[in-house]
Length: 227
Picture (cartoon, rainbow, N blue to C red):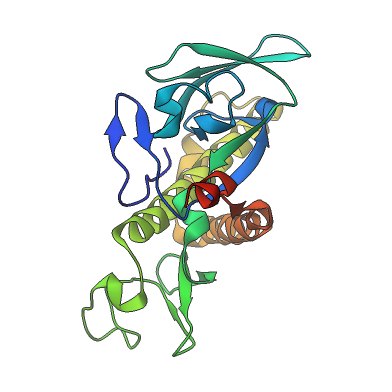
């Protein structure tokens, strides 16, 4: 689930509008579970009073035909959209991260960290100083609690994806070799050296994917008009 930006409030599956919001413009066919849709961009709900104050939390996406998509919003009824209907979707917090993300191939476990621009140092742990000797508050790097949580969730998701990829790869090889159990695979991949290469690749891909997707992030025009 996406981290909810600071200052938003959960209300029966909906979130209050937040000023200065960054968004994606998505066709309905590209909506995903947990997307937060600005209901003012919905042609059927934009005039409803709730649309002026709330975002809709997507919990169901059904591709009913080659022409229509049914979207279920938590706390609201299902809505049918033409597949190419463009909706405004709130950018997850990781796309608002205030520093350049980078892969830090630390001695123990590689992670996604960020570059502290004033010092040029890659920061693995935002609770440590640039020299790693002192504890600091993440605010010293200009990070909000939401930024810290988004970075943590990103690293957790990438690590889990690496585990899933290794499991899928091992299973495909075992099936081809007619091996009926994964005992040897479990032992083979128990060491950090065997996992490290796959994890570094996954981390690098995640950073590259974020940078690519950020090209589609725009200012929320509706919020700007409201101001």
